[in-house]
Length: 546
Image (cartoon, rainbow, N blue to C red; front, side, top):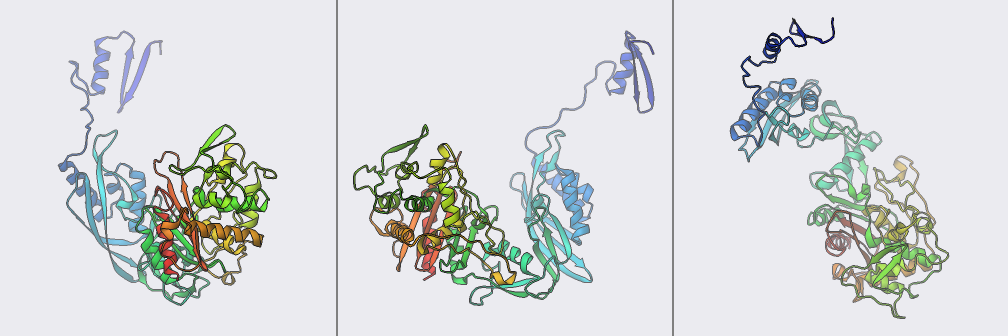
């Protein structure tokens, strides 16, 4: 074909256009593109703006109708992510064996429509009614302009997360009857934040506890975390699993964290390492108490003080001036607003500890014989952090990396690269007041013969000084923990912490303390100063342990 000739094959029509062919060629292409010879209007413009009330109602109605009929592909086509939606809707019918679906929409609030679902789950000759509530939101499709259901797995079930599926069949693990240290049964209904923990214990110890699996509807999680049971069609035989938890302390922990958003707490026995309570109040239902990885603020000064004492830099009653600012390798560090500086001869480590003076610690971390790795060694060798704890469920055991530059100073006051959670800080307190590291645990080690982490612990003199400084912080007039710990009897001590977070106007609130043979630690993300949120949580838990 000669130069300048273009060929178009459209719907079986073969059109030849020669350069300069003029009106005839234009007319053919115009017709093929849907335009007329007189320049008729092109495709209608894509709609924009929020969907109207009529569009919300119509889209919702069509989506529900296809869902009720088990038409996964058709229902998914009414969403803005048909691939992901079809996969979940297919699992709803084929994997979860859910039939007889009846969806009743509630009154729309703008583009959001609440609804209730009634259905039946059948498997292996067993059937049971399924009843739950959820909601959806209708949005405008970005490219089509159509009103579509904004796809989220929670549309299909409120507990579904991304890439999760629904399954019905023999349970992956036999059920367990978890009991506390005194034989009290622990359920997720009575202790809601134990839900994920009980699922984890069932997944790991169901076979070892002597139970038999039943038949259930469950959520199979894409991250390989334990299945979440939604409905039991045939009960299995639960095996009894003894835990170290205390029902009374757990109840207090559950109540305390509910008072503050994004909060977590752990309580344990310093003399044994047994975990007495673990509770979380979070939007994501995550066990941040055991798995969190965030800066612990000035609660870290317990470990830093131990490092200073163990390396002969100073002692509890040794000098530790508290200037307004401290410079470390071109970075300036300050104290919390309102903290009065003290550069007198009477400024001691104990004074800086109980008032939580940042500069007092930073001025000392470059003293001989300290190195970039000294704080790491103290954390790991003395306090057992970073040593692969085997608590019985998934947990993070802290990280204090050897750091250079400004992070070496920042690490010393619980910022920089240090990462902790309430489990770690409760353990740090337990080691500080007893001098021995005892790895925390929820389930006895002899159930699965798992190895426990070990560490050297502290010299008796170091532990005695740390315990006394924590006592002063909780009882002396200048102590930052006095208000939170007021009214508690027995031998008490504490340390407060506020951790700054990039991009957040409010700091994370941290607090760790002890009362006799119970240590507890809490964090409340964006909760403010240590005594504002985390302090009352810890105090409530310690009060219940008496």
